[in-house]
Amino acid sequence: MHDDMQALFAADAKRLREAAPSPPPAWRIVQSARANAARRLANRMRWAWRIAALVFVAAAIPVVLHDPRSVPGLVAPLLLGALLCWRDEPGFVETR
Image (tube, rainbow, N blue to C red):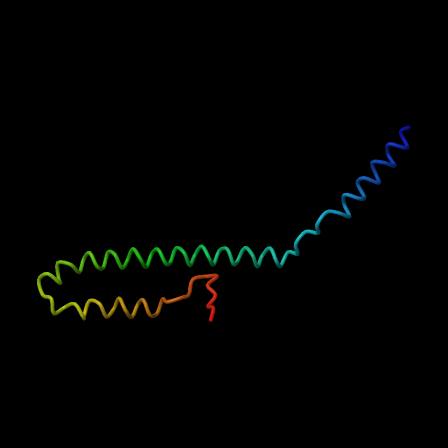
């Protein structure tokens, strides 16, 4: 009886091992971790840019109210910074 149980257990264990998916290779885990870290860093940088732009605009309001001719001088650095930091959103696919 004990040998039959052992044989059934061994057969079940073998079948389960064969049916189980193989673990991902180590390089794929590292690649996924780097992609996730890059995605989180990009998200933080986008938020930092948004907050910096908001602070800049809030600080520029008194200057613009005092001298409206200073608007181009205040907007130009924002546009240059936005142009340098421009990146498409991840996963964006252009369809035509």
